[in-house]
Image (cartoon, rainbow, N blue to C red; front, side, top):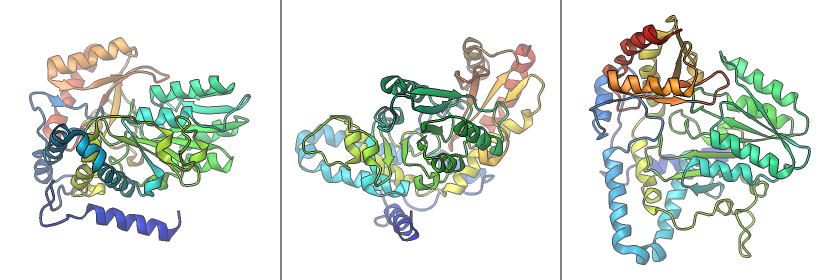
Length: 426
């Protein structure tokens, strides 16, 4: 992307984020502060009407809406219910364009490069399954750290085209340079490689992958890259072009804080034809990004709430947001790092993590064993977590604080894990 275009996009994003008047529907003025300013972040947490009966450390599924965003969503639901097709067929198209343009500005791309989806899995399934440049004898590459449905889509694409899907395992003890080298070796060792799937932040361990460096190497070999940024978008500060890939799937219901049912995808301008349309339509434009995913009638209220969600996020400095999430993560990881019988799956290199990090208790590698650990954390210590399976070396438990999480809530995990490790490690 040239400097002029990038500057214009960033200016558009800033203009879109600015309050329209003295008070926007989601409030005005900055929120948050330095990572250790607990009082400032408590004010942010107060805007999230989340249950406090349990300690919610499983915030990677979807993000709770802040109360001002939820109010806008409720108003949109009421309007759709009240005005029905009168609004939908006569006025909603303009509001859809506003939502799409706001998405594009936040992503740092052009509106015509953006399509809407209901979730990232749906978007990525379309991008992978409809990728055109794969044929008999070709190869495509993915890893054990990728999302399950994306792995399945890669396998299905290979089978449908007579190609071969090559699966690699990420390093058990990852480093920034080691991850880059692992993918470089795999790319160089795979002849007739046409497509690589990269997950920016893994949903199992919380590992941040150096997508930019890996993608640059792939593209230097003539290999296209599809990136999954479902977990990282708006948890980590970046714009989509920063990653240097042509195709991206993401969602807006995690760290953007939009309602469930709203996601998007990106196809770089000039690359639309690389993804087949969802269906043949006589009047379809060949460069129509949305034509790559047919939505039909869906719940429009989440889409109409997207601008409000970005308005709210614009009040929080992205670098401060990341620093706070990393600080909450470190409150449990650092006291437990090196504990005999406990493996923490993500290193402390700030380039490789944000909020999420998973652990494994020695000898507890099966899905059933890790489900039992999450049950014990909830039943005995009142801590909500989630098990993850699919890694080459076994299942694990993921911990993900959010902006509304208090330091005391994270601190409660430390003695709980010390107790469980003493009881369970083999």
